[in-house]
Length: 173
Image (cartoon, rainbow, N blue to C red):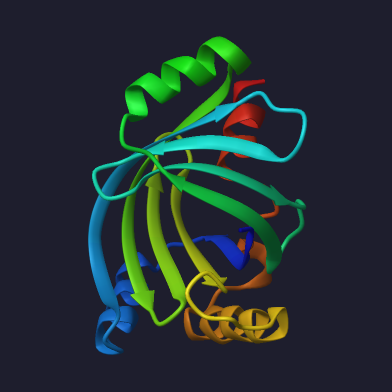
């Protein structure tokens, strides 16, 4: 089944303030995940293998590049043998780019929050309102993202249009 995320990704210099906001509101802190997202060459959407100490999944998604809240349609497949799958996909499709990050993961209901530090890119915050655990309309997911965007004092100029993978590919050129 395909799920929907409405997500916001932004640069931040306020990680401590965001972290405190989440903890003060009883967010469920899942921990710090050291993740490598390996993106593969595919003709449609994006395909990445996320390998971490908390989350290890194969993720296909389609999302338009635009600043502010954006809809992402995605499929998530838990992976037991990530190293073999990575080698299989590398052999079949080739690697497009790899993103290495340290990610703090929090939840408030159906909304997932990431405070990310990326090698070579800096500090970021992500807000992902999803219908994966609750049947919510897109409008409600958008409303949730906007609520937390305001709470975190994310300004328009801090919003990212592109994914981390796009930013790394741009930096390599």
